[in-house]
Image (cartoon, rainbow, N blue to C red; front, side, top):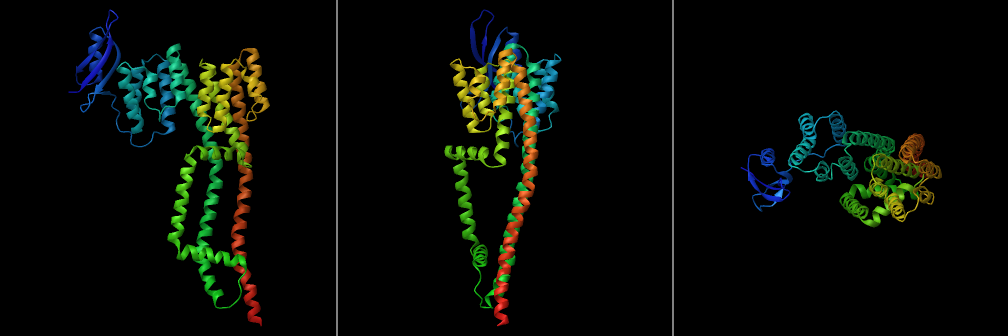
Length: 406
């Protein structure tokens, strides 16, 4: 039978610790409570080292965002209607279809029944539950508003998911068009140009420079594909390492918000996500400093993260949030002015919610604008590339026809 190590408070206030040999953690918790002990910690000992650890079933695939949103929504309804937290988690674990999420919820049940705080149990799964999720649950435990907090959190997660899907939808068309264009060009270089090379070789004509360049590239892809693939693989690996480096992350994030057409949309996306996070934190009673720091973590861009961290530092010194925001070029003046009005009237939470909604609506308009602009641009680019290749193939025909005429 497994051995469980516990630390508990006796009825007289003293701290006791020891081990129990029982069937499972639930029986260990019942035994301790029957003895009049208040559980501080309870965990199973590993056989190899004797150290305590919480056993988590294998997760398998990555837990999808929709499963986390469904978990928060379902738990909010149950807790808000008076269902005890452990019973609610048990019910959700039974009804969860995704095996990875079910394993996570079952582990949460085990930890909570063992005396671990819910926020601490969530914190043991950082890849599933964000710091924002954990912080809001910690605040709800202190204020006794877990049901309301979970409802607001599920609404925030749904809005964030919808915003991400809108951005991904706007990027799908240009990525597909660009991929198709690249495949067409590769196909022409590998299968079509070598046939034209044989035709031109027997005519003795001097080929134009664009044609020679295309034939050289075609020859490289057909006869030296191993070298080309090695070079491409080395370039991809180098690019991945560069993007993971601090310099690469700064360069990529700078590029995201500064490139034409896509840059303004990326700025609005980071701003909308940041303001929605900040609004959620303020309206749920989290301190301004914690809200600013968490907003920096979820902003999705290093430059926005730096900005929110700077605002947090200035707030520590007693500066007004709206006044400092007016000095930041990444925040539109209208947003700073609306937040200043919220500070003056003492309604910062509701005003920030309205501002976040305003920025999300502005983002939707930007996505539609970018989508309408990208479509003709991609068609023009594809036409120029394919048309350029066709022209390069047709140019030698004029030279060959002249030789034949003479």
